[in-house]
Length: 324
Length: 236
Image (cartoon, rainbow over all chains, first blue to last red; front, top):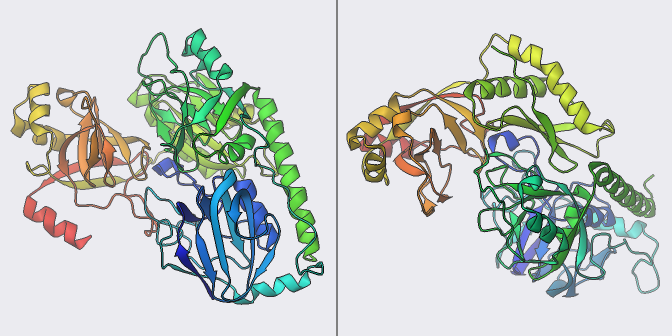
């Protein structure tokens, strides 16, 4: 009842929707960088929405299944591996061997029944800076054996209508993958937008930003022209949020991602619409993004649209499994 | 206690809002913010996931996919704050707990003692005495899990942050800057001036209350010897 890690890949971690309720003691929710692809992967194997899955980053792992396992991979497309965006029955002893990401940066591998790791503070998400959650609080390494929660869950595959080659005809849509770069990401003005000089305000919106190599699950550093404020006064430290765009004195903007700090003392030029954070998370280092200003109302509408699209896809998949 | 009024409500994207009371640090305002945060948490609003008291205001983190998430969250957030003001100010009980943190101020752990003494123009042996004599309050938590910004530092010890941050500050390091003190919950890079170390574990996700310190807690530091430090650290 397990999956063996033959090669860990660049950064493969156990993630779920994250842990809420601890931001007041400085712990961010964390969880899957692309929650949309994560949710689809779970739906594709008949899991509940928040079951733990593997987040695979830029260079994928090689895994071996120790028993028949129903799996699905969503999000970034990698060289090799399983068919994308559809459930696949991995036979006992078979290997999932993936190379580099060819489109997007992060894929989610879900197994029917989920991975058997204990929740910490209500979540199975790995929080790397604090070294807890997920599998021993760390990224996977060679030789790890990940337990599965339910060996019988592979049976679910028998419920699906299949084609002659034993796969399903349909697939889940790749909602968060960029068709082309730069991707467009909506932002509302940050608390300190007005304190930036006019050139910097314009540059923030006109520039095609590039995700810098030193980006990680905590934040994406954006390469482009340095941004400045005419009065470089210190601001009172305050709360931050997933998607806050901070500008430290270096002038290099940082977009806060899943494992972000919960407070910060740098001015925030923008706040990314929550619906677009998952798409930004699919940029690998070197990936290109530009920002478009929108109102809070539009950001709310984008969120609603994205949720409805995801819910309708999840409902469609559940129907294939005979769930209402 | 005077009733401060919110300066405004600032969206932190579409999933959170910051209700600002002051753009500078005011300990009285912060005290109200702490009470307000608890009063709002107590209401268990289903679409609010987290209430984060900060130095000059508080953040409300939303669940924007919740069925009861309002169409105008900023207005609702502000209304919630205003409605919670009365019960917050009326609450007899002081929010937060009293916590005593043992600290070893000996030179081995007081990495920046000489520099602080020089900058503050205070004899080195007086730095620890003054720090341990203070009564502190957790004004905000952030930077890392379990990392508390505590106000109440003796103004004589108010020195700026180090000009270049340390790549790794050892876990448990007690440090000061401006008129605040912090304790680093684990080894992490940081720029505050280190004056000692506590053997206590500030954050442990396996504990039922993972954080030793919570917003609004009242903190005192108790000087311990190196031998006591080693003994207490081993018992953790």
